Image (cartoon, rainbow, N blue to C red):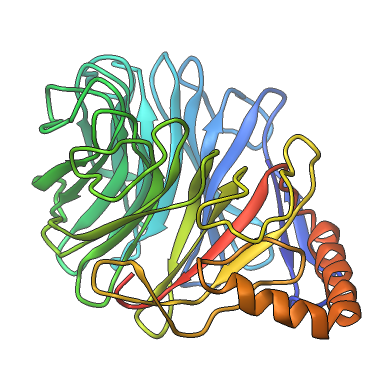
Amino acid sequence: MVLATLQALAQTAPPIAWQKALGGTDTDEGLAIAATSDGGSIVAGTTFSNDGDVGGNNGFYDVWLVKLDALGQIQWEKNYGGSAIDVANDVIQTSDGGYLVAARSNSEDGDVPMNNGDWDNWILKLDAAGDLEWQTVRGGNGHDEPQVCAETADGYIIGGRSNSVNGDVVGNHSWTFDMWVYKLAFDGSLFWQRCYGGTSSEELYDLQLMPDGGLVMAGKGASDDGDVTATCDTAFSDFWVVRTDAAGTIMWQQCYGGSDIDFVRTVRATLDGGFIVAGTTESVDGNVVTQKKPHWPHGDMDLWVVDPELDASGGWNGKGPWEVAPGGGGAFPGAGELQKKKKKKKKKKKKKKKSAVRHSLLTAGTRCARTCLVLRRGIDG
């Protein structure tokens, strides 16, 4: 596990403030990190080690948590797990100074009290020292995996994917994956749970809390039925963005992409009440209208930025600002003509910008075998 902090972003690679390699003599993997109120950070992942920085092991891969101070020094580390595989996919610091960990587990011994079949959600609430306050195992007889967790005013939201049709999972649309989202009280008891999807496969990769208490969820969609009332690419997958109210009821949902593989990796709320989503694409059509050629498997890298004004259903209404970042990419229908005009007027200038952006991203260590998409959304999606 290797960590590094960088100074303020610039055109050239920022200097490293500090970096740490954490782990033992076997496999150690960091999968999530969160800033903490004391200026340090909390790192979560999995470990197979039982030496070095790792204080113990329950038999195979354990959830591994490391608390660092502002200079990257270890303040404490904890491992939780059983005799099978236990992996932390996300961690947050909670308002009481403790931590919430969203992990997947197929253990049913050691620290893990039970298993519903295959992979389960294993949610751990820890105090400020990393000691266990409570835990809950959620899932059914299939593959249930959390990707992200968040704190609300009255509890916690867990989001991920599930193909279970029993146990804690109610309403799955088929034996393929649905987005699975549920809300827990501060003591770990269940408020509500919902499955989102159709008869093909939908998976949640990220979610954000919105100012009204609702959620914006982002992942991939490949159905054209069930909850997926927008037109998604059923042959491969599209970006699928879902906006809900505080109770998890869908307010609107939209698919974005082309005829090849498109899926969201992350979503972040913005200060104006909107949000921005980023992901990858192999498409050269549909919403990706200004991509010049397929980049896969050539390994080229572009950045697509769109800032449209959207209607209440999340669809672009043909108005509002937008921009395409240097390096290629695309825009929503209607913006492509404007981009072509700009390209004629500032052809040489754009070529310089393209080189600078790629240099900056590559120097910072970013790689994208497929095209990287970044979509800017307004309050209505």
